[in-house]
Each structure stands twice: as structure tokens, then as C-alpha cells.
Length: 249
Ligand code: G
Ligand code: G
Ligand code: MN
Ligand code: NA
Image (cartoon, rainbow, N blue to C red; front, side, top):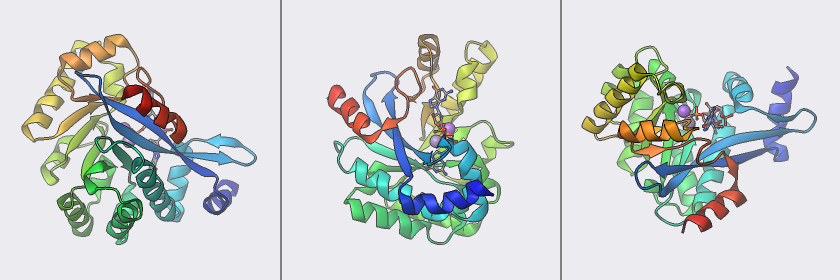
């Protein structure tokens, strides 16, 4: 397709950028870091959502060089932030199945002189559906080096709980559909249970998609560790993230 062809050209022409969405402590509202999110400015069509182009890039393999670029760019940007802030980068199942992911991560950290503990990789449940021994081993090695591993969009897959037995995640990110409906007592009970499981397993729990003060009150009541969402800040360009950091100091 046209989009697929344009996607191939986009990495060469610098049409991709990263935006950064702030993440805060739920109790203290202290800035903890940012999630890096890809943006594509198409020359003719304008901005195209990653929800649209990432599946194409996964299909044709472009996600590998694109994901590598995002890792390098995110680590480079984070190296300019205070040491107590981390950067989270989304990693596709396709990238994880490639043998080169570990080298790409180590290369990005080294090029940026960024401590491994400041990088978090977000993987979705779908990664683990077809988990191979090799990709599990890769995650274990990266984690042993200090890289944090988060389970993204938790609760939306078909057998979410089983994934928690397969890997010692540092963080669980509760999918924003739960936060949207958290005024419903049953949904609030589920969120509380997820936090309980995460705590027992030694994982922090982030509430995604917090948009209202009522939702914030609820996720605090359910003891979520960190919060992220439009209430606190949308994904913004690197320069604006730098201003958020300055303002929070
Ligand atoms: O930023 P936005 O809400 O439009 O992102 C839509 C989806 O694209 C989210 O599921 C997000 O995780 C995914 N996404 C954004 N940036 C990246 C990236 O760098 N790599 C991968 N694999 N997915 C990304
Ligand atoms: O799948 P993942 O969690 O990586 O998706 C991140 C996406 O979620 C980003 O594209 C971001 O724009 C979007 N997002 C972040 N905060 C909110 C929010 O409060 N509400 C909604 N609707 N989307 C959000
Ligand atoms: Mn994510
Ligand atoms: Na998510």
C-alpha cells in the first residue's frame, strides 16, 4: 500500500518523532518519568496515529529499525533529564522475537550513557501469547542488567493472570478501559485486586488513562502506585517535557 511505502521512506527522511507523556506518583504527585510514544508526520496526510502505522510496520518488519530508532532517541533524551527520572519505551512483540533486541537496548543505553535502571520496556500481553524461550531469556537478561520490564495494557488480553506467572514484571500498567469505568464498584474492586496481586508480586501498579479528578481519587483509594493520563498531561514533544521537568523541580 501507499502507507507501507511511505513508512519505509519515513525513517530516512526524519518524519518520525517521539512524544513524552509524564507519569507521577499517585500519592505524592511527584514526577517519576515519561512514556515515549512514536509520532509520524506524513508529508501529505499529516499526523498518522501509531495505532494505524505500528500494525503495518509489524507486518512488514519495519518495526525493527523503527523500534531501534525509538530506543536510541528515548535514551538520548532521557540522558538529559535528572537521574531520578526514567523513560519507558514500548516494545512490539515482533521486536522481542528478533534476536537483535538485547543488542539494540544495550547499544541505545551505551550511546546515551544512560544507566540501565533508568530505562523501562513496556510489553503487552500479546507478546507472551507466543513467547519463545529465546524472548523470555532476552527479557531476563535485560532485567538482570537493571532494565525494568512493565506489562502494558493489563487486563485486556485473554488470560492476563497467567502472564504474571511467566515473568517477574517490575510494573503492571492497568489498561485505561478499567480507569474509565472505575466509578462502577465492580470495576473498582477489580482494580483493587490487581493492585493487591501486583504488590504481592513486588510489582508497582500504574493506572493509565486518568482523565478526571474523580478517577484520580478512585485510583488513589485502590492504592495504585503511579498515575498517567490526560488529567496530568498529554504526550508532548521533548522540549515541552523538559519544561515539565523544570517546573516540577
Ligand atoms: O500515542 P498513542 O495513544 O496514539 O499510541 C497508540 C498505540 O501505539 C499505543 O498502544 C502505544 O503503546 C503504541 N505505541 C506508541 N509508540 C510506540 C512505539 O514506539 N513502539 C511500539 N511498539 N508501540 C508504540
Ligand atoms: O498502549 P499504550 O498504553 O502504550 O498507549 C498509550 C496511549 O494512550 C498514548 O497514545 C496516549 O496518547 C494514550 N493516552 C494517554 N493518556 C490517556 C488518557 O488519559 N486518555 C486517553 N483516552 N488516552 C490516553
Ligand atoms: Mn504503553
Ligand atoms: Na497501555
